[in-house]
Length: 510
Ligand code: MN
Image (cartoon, rainbow, N blue to C red; front, side, top):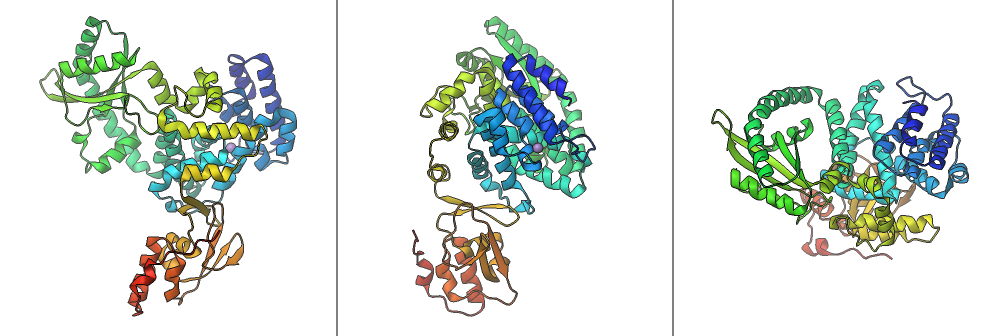
């Protein structure tokens, strides 16, 4: 990506003064990264330029795009946040700072397997809270997307690590923001690196099956179109093919049986109003036989990420009278835009909406109910930017209710219940680590086993072979997992464990 290309693109969308700001940022970053090269051999500046270009494509606001240009300057060059604030203002500096901090959290992550799937949603929230402004996360996603797209030049092990992290952390994050297109891109590239053989196999299968299916769909399509015209409903219809990765996941769920997957192709009908969505559903169910249990009304009950649409799978027959199942997705243009672009869509066609998010109590029309936490974060972000004191802890409490987030020295994140103690963490890492814990360092200092952990703590567990759990360890854990493991081990050693010992709650320190 060349800088004049990016500027040219920006010129089409922004005022002159904003383009000037972008040009100044490109200048600043070019000087800062001067002489640096990416592993691809390209000048480093191509990377932030590509990130900014993606952000323009996503129709983000100018400050996000400027921050996209500057996003690696603090981390990788001599430039400071103060330099950036002086030249580009508080808002840009705030965003760059957020991206830098997010990068630091993620840095050094080795044991990706410690990312438990069930924590992914909390993890997404954590990243967003750390970024403090949803735009920080969107910039980070654009950054990650480009890193994935240029993964080829890295070593095999780095490829695996980045692909795995993208699949487990960034794709769910994009999903949380309902950025459907981006999620699919992240998943497809990652999966291609993680399991190339499977990717290629499924891709071939998909092509073969979709090829014959789309031909078979023609008659169904025609039938639907004729009826929609008759009923004078304005519509756009197209087909979407299932992505390789989502096919992979579904096949795993259905014993690798392709015939149980009905949505290799889904027909999408986009109409003008909510009313029309339900009308179309009625028409489809009149024309074909709806499959039981496969009618989903995500309009009246949106998904947690704000996704809205009606889904139904119907049974029909193709021209050879063979049974044919077709999934339909029915939505309005707005719902469609939001499903594809997610939260970035808010920046796209309604910057006012954002301002509303900042200002309202989170009760704005247009922002789906499940996304209200985003509004909370935006409000906080605005207050932070205005220089107001904000109790981040309070915000975190609200978001994570009663979980704390702690790190291993290599940067892996674990969530634990509030009040968790060092041995809870040790057993959370691994039973064998827990059992042989000699001592625990929190933020570099050795602490007692009864010292509660806090969000942000970096914890190192020092083990010694030959160590065995002691009876009083039971009083020094609060998680059922650790307690069970300790009891089991004690019993194995023939230690009598009084029942009440395990019932005891830890003394809560304040
Ligand atoms: Mn970067």
